[in-house]
Length: 380
Figure 1 (cartoon, rainbow, N blue to C red):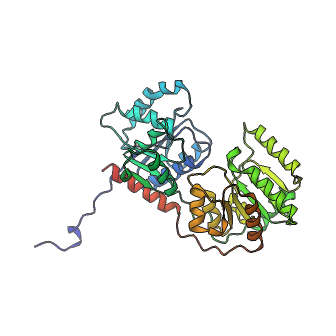
Figure 2 (tube, one colour):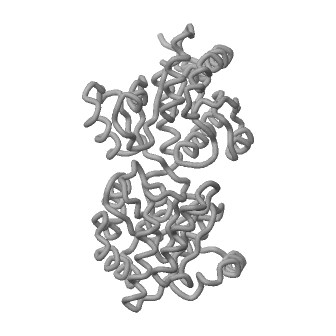
Figure 3 (cartoon, one colour):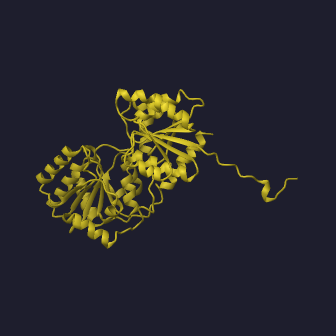
């Protein structure tokens, strides 16, 4: 007869994993933020988390949260980078990882060749973060035992371009946000508002439109500036914040945008800034968050962040942004490149924005749990 007492059932011990993530660097970007979020979850679950990259401003945060960082330039697009396969192999041999997770193409190639010389060989996992140009160079990100994609849009994209890819290996794990970091209905306090509008006095006195994006032509800064000019022509006074557009090495692009601002006669209505850490308060102060990338993107994190705060989003309905808007805020969708409809929809949303329900999906802990479950599964 079986003993029914409490000692008769023993919990299965959780296997401790060593997971190495490979990235070009740790400066900024979606892949980098996801890597830090997964690294944090690994540490909290008692696993060993290591990131190998050329370093950057996020490396100190990574280490402060309990992960290890090993500096090795595996992302520079140069033939010399191939010479680092040996160094990467030696590093991995010392670490004895269970899983090597590559999040970018060149680090994936180096990781792929480095693990071929290891016994036992670590399990190889990849994440496709963007709509990369199809071809042999990008195909390395489809060689993982598990291939993570951040949206259904991206899953459809890779399966349509790589007929040999087994759909069973492709796992959709959307990026997520922390609802506590972007709480529903949040409003910044008076001290923050006073400091912000003292710093940027020209942004006060009218509804604020914010386009958060790095300084690259693909992000739709021109469309945003021309939107404000068109609204002005209709007698609708607004302000525009191009958040994060000022970056080292992008000075010529910033000057180009300034020239357009003056040509459109909206110099008193547009402010350009470097990246800031108070994006939650900026979003919460904004009447509209803009997502106007003129090329489809794989995901649209700012869409989720803004809607989590209960702030309306206006964006082009293609790629991952279109996918998110269709599911979470259909009123914010505009056909890509339809400038006239963009102006009309902006005016409508500024007048009366449809209500936004509290976010029940795209949460950070869901993403972290899904990735850790994938690691556990692939490592057996």
